Length: 586
Image 1 (tube, helix red, strand yellow):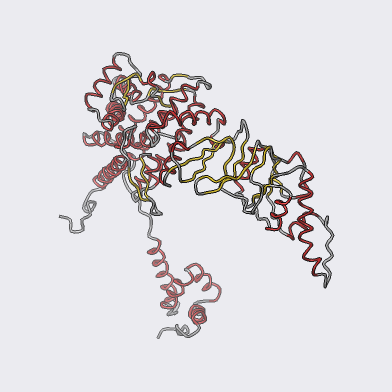
Image 2 (cartoon, one colour):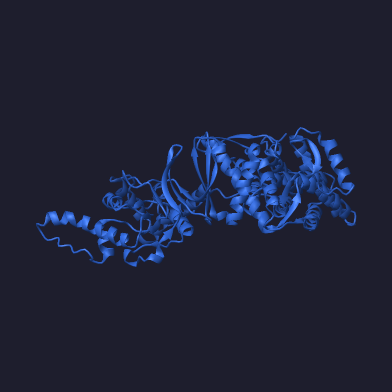
């Protein structure tokens, strides 16, 4: 036996490449196994403790992957795959990782039979392109205004998450938000613990966690004229911006007048704003309490310290312009809304800016715990993303594993037209696709073998939409049942999984990152050798200096002042003679 326990010792280069390749596939399979049991509406949840010690209970693939520790580079590739899927399609993170793992499992079986990795890579590439063509052929075109289809897409997405029991309620909310904005960048989320899931609502406008802070300030205004500021409202800043509109004679001895000057400046500002009809001031920067009090007395609703990003969103909502100089304010710069008010929601106070037919919407999420609130937010965001992609792509596919079975069936027919070894890889690709409905059946409590046989029989008979209704534990026409998925999402699942599997199959070795500390020590040794050749015994002092100031800084010092400067600088640093002045060794 190898005393070092290293399986790569005493192996040929070919054997080393094979061991590393098998190891990579094993790591990828283990990564995909993390979420196999979470696929589908009846999938299992995972308990995660995040970096802050909070407990997360979820079956959302992206959430699971974002909170796991990744040590191996192959795990990093699988993690990037899930992130890319979520960024491009908004959903399907669990499916894409599972499919990548299954493709590698089938590839390992072919490798054991003696097939070369290049044949598998070529076969998988052919299968991926053919599968994409099949998906495009099977896709059903839908109108951009066909609300029924969008509702079904939203329900399918919600059905696999924590809101499955409320999918009809929240599908309506998701579709309404998507049809109103048609852009996920205009749909925002705010949350407050307390209440229940049924207290979640869609708000026409923006909800901001903030408050007025000034006692007795007006808390609600109808039909407001809104001034958006990005300007400090301080005495010196205000005086400068007014350009001397208020005469200040701060002569020696005029103490009273000096103190009253601040009030005069704020009075001038409030008067100038009031003449434009402004009754709401929203500022992203600080404002003096004195200025806030002047706003209160003038009946102006004022909020300070708003995040700049929120101020830009309010500008989009109200049609106002963000002003930096008071002298530039005009009526055309003001924004408008139906109402603005301060309101207590749960344990927090919020500013609510409401506007009918608003291009900006906010989902106010409620829940008993922070964990519940966070999970609901992730679920609704996935449903919104999926629905928007359907609206953009305008094509759908049957869900419930139906499309995987149909594509697998057609890939097998395509494989038999290939006369090279790549035929085996195409067949393996088809087998990997069928693992999705098989896992879905297992997680739903159905017999996977009989379910898959029944699905194949239905598809052989021309029932292209035959898939699994997990809740009813039945095989149904998924299009009629409303179990559908966007074409873009499914296309990205197949493409992303195939490309990742191909990339992993092409890896046959690791080039480890150089140990930076070891490299630094080696360079230091080289420097000391140079010094000793010059009859300069500087070893102890030089090592000490490198640890304190870094090798580059010490090398630069030596170039300018010579080796003798090293102990001299160190003694000055320590304030005593720690290193003897440099002498030539005997």
